[in-house]
Image (tube, rainbow, N blue to C red; front, top):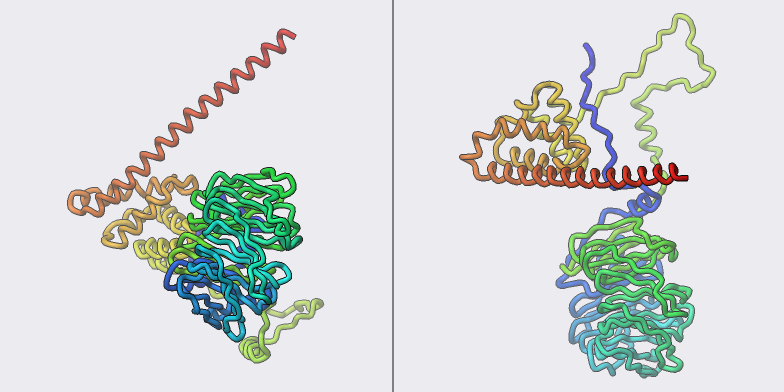
Length: 507
């Protein structure tokens, strides 16, 4: 008896998706683990020291999490009002945070003790940063000022009346600690030399600036506001490039891959990853809620994203380690197998009988149903597997096989409730896909033939058919427009060719 031959799933490339080195690299991030907090995540920051613990600023507290267990290891709650923008020092021993009360507070990470309080701002302090040496803090406040604080002396060394509106972001140059960058809701970003308190560069972003980023070498800086990112030359103060890949406000910027990749987070729930050599998008990460803040650890090992819904997502890079099989498992495997000669010079002698190795045939669930002619259950199983694996070609291949068997109509008939809705949703969703449209239009015609009598009795069936009708009408309209466009292009090409021929004849 011949073995059952299962459905051959169509091997079709996904439209518009290209597999590149960056795609494979960023897919090595584990599935995101989300943790719910009490309110919107104001800021996230990852320590530069292993194990790359990260600080989450939310409501009136700052919590430090272990990236492996995602459990809270430290909690700082000595804030009268909402805390803002907590950041680690480069050695990971201290953490500084601003607040709605305008006070910048400094904590010891290990002992959780409050070491310093820097009082002086007249408005909320949204962001603060340590200087490269770690002995000073720069704060950016809604009172439109930028201040420099001395940690040992707990004194304010400098105050710069920087902007005409809220200062919501800032950065300190790693190459030159005397250079400070600030961004404001007055649409301007400015670079200050703290030795003279003067603005040496002033650029207009033409939108409220929500995030700024300075490259480690100090030669280029970026501003983010509205739905665009702008790249500026520090020396000349000129615009080098403009990126507009988001359709909502860009809220945060980070560098990754040793400065070779730029990450931008937005309220459109996407994190875009760019190649800094040409600022083209190389990969996109999707999240369930609008993004307010994010950070990534050295070597891109940990990615943390904070969202407006109070969720923050944690992803860790999968290690490319060879699978190690224990000796116990090896012995157990050997006990179930017979020793086979692995000598490359082994020759089958005359009189020997060679028994081919029999392998058990694995059948998917829909193939199992098809084998027993349960076509309706086979179609249902294929739809579920296609939805679970995000591979619509599985269900389409089964539908094509049912058409070949002349069993599509029995497979579609007799469905009610969720089973019928699943089929109609699938056909409606992929009817306009050029890879599947031929098969799914045949399926749609059979569905109309089977369920047309129910339109007058079932409101849900009527609604689904109306949606399908709109999809088909829109697709027909698109095809007509494309044919008209093709005709125009062909006419222009023909006219151009005739002009070339006429000029050649004159010559």
